[in-house]
Image (cartoon, rainbow, N blue to C red):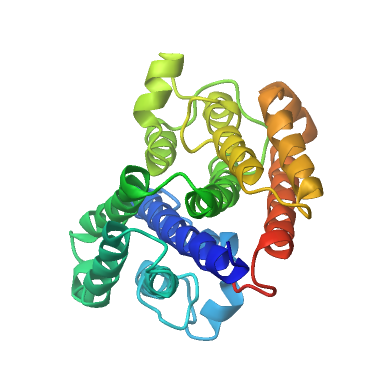
Length: 312
């Protein structure tokens, strides 16, 4: 496969996944803002995506309205939902002959609907409906990929982009939200505020999963264990890295041996890791190092397979 084709497929998938993750972050912030004395963390949403400076260039204060408009509709913000879905569509257009017609139609239709989405709805009671729509379109894209694509290199580059993006976003989300809820302290023995932890779990579609796995009160340690180490949780760091490693193996070439080794090493550390050791080391330090290693993998994947200096 041509490196340019692989590049478009990989980034198409990353942008679709990124749009969904932004919607999830904003959704939990909005839910928390509805709780009396709850901290929605609008500023943290900017921090988690490295967008504080770009935001301050346009806005004076991180209010709900300003952050929502910046993270949803601002075309100058490369990480806004609008920008992500536009770039996903542009990458899909570049490889229309490689993806299926159903995939192209789904991606193109998502962009057209997003482009024409009424902005006034973001300020009303329909904001939650919008976030659900973004998540649904991402789910639809993955479903069409699984249901129509040949399991060839194109398919594996799409999956590789999806799960590398998910691993990075989930780690950032856990880090910021956890420290907002416990003020950066060691995890308490008693359950924290039920609604806040419930909102965090729902933001990654893990509330029902948590109940099935633990069947008791929601506690910080168990929430982080589920989202970091659980092999059956679809959005956990462990599950994401298993997918990254397996898809890297499927597209391996003579240059990628070291990249595969590093991906395997990272997923093995999650497979055999214990949540007690994570907290003993420090959750923030653990997640920061994980994010660094994921970003290093992304750089190595670009060098091994993709067009040099690929835009993120």
